[in-house]
Length: 482
Ligand SMILES: Cc1cc2nc3c(=O)[nH]c(=O)nc-3n(C[C@H](O)[C@H](O)[C@H](O)COP(=O)(O)OP(=O)(O)OC[C@H]3O[C@@H](n4cnc5c(N)ncnc54)[C@H](O)[C@@H]3O)c2cc1C
Image: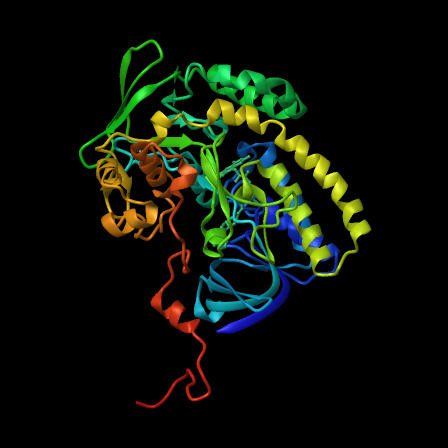
């Protein structure tokens, strides 16, 4: 196992991680940036510098704009560890020790890596909000974000009859990207509740500071409408049906009319939520964000978490979008540089001002988006026959039955039902399980809590685990005669 040392380990090479690396390098810190991806960019700028598409302009201006940031990151002097999954971080005294698995061929350095760092910035971004609806486990159903990842990483886009179902900006963005790529979309089934605009109204004026976002959103929606794609608004009673793969999607529209669309591909979306596994495994405090209906780590304005030497920035600290993530990364890096003695207080303050103002401007639109697009409880808490834990095949009815017996929370639920014990380690059921227990016991979700997350936070092989175990002086690895 090889070992590396640095001042700052950044996990995630999205806008937050790359911006943080640039700023930390400018302050003179040695920086390692580990990311699972082949190239830097994160979710939004995935492969922006090496796109498999003949014309990556179909993904829009924002995607193309990522190349500038990637270029500055490449020039920053930070060491980028590509194809590296960080699966454990622990502290030995003041030093953070991270375990990474590097993919690829052994001759290219694949295997286990250990990184020792004086500080850690978690910039692991967001994941799509799991949306358990009837039939969501059928082959042919995937997330809009997952489908977009296929386009960005492999140049594969749906070729026919896809139905996009759900709510939120990414749904409209992906529909408009497919149209630009010359692909068709059969229909959009929009689950945004009819009266969501009422809740959004008080947030309209403050959101005007981010008017460019609103205009961009309206333009996207208009492009989809102009293409003549049927849009069914205010949809409810959704059901995805098929024998051994999806064949149709049924729903009721806002006028109460029932619809059934034949399709072989359903793309679901209900927004994105912070990826919290890594900060949770480190013991960082989290809070339930009622407006966005998701967990987020507790951080201060510079991304400092409740655990010493650990900062969190970008969508992983709360959904704000790519621009906000980049400024949050800058602020965290400046704070880390000050904490490690590389910047004095006045330089830190002077350099932070611009990023702080820009961050606030980019966040101005969030309360409006949350009020419009956070799915209501009825969509987040599925009917009894719907699978919630996909890995262990546990349905909502079983979770409700166990909750009604007085189960104390998600960790006890895990012991009783096995939900959260599969390879996704709770990423796809954790939030729903907490919400269902809260519903049955008439308690608040923040009282119920979340799974206790332990390393390895992502699946690793036994060989990789074994490689990470230090040997004492009496034993050494290597070839020996049989
Ligand atoms: C599937 C998906 C698609 C999206 N597409 C768009 C889009 O097209 N346009 C848009 O405006 N917004 C999009 N978003 C929202 C977008 O992700 C952000 O607003 C923005 O990218 C956040 O930047 P970030 O730096 O916080 O995180 P990200 O850009 O998500 O970067 C986080 C990085 O951390 C890496 N990572 C996570 N865990 C580990 C680990 N344990 N070890 C190593 N690496 C790890 C990930 O591979 C990723 O590269 C998308 C979100 C998702 C979930």
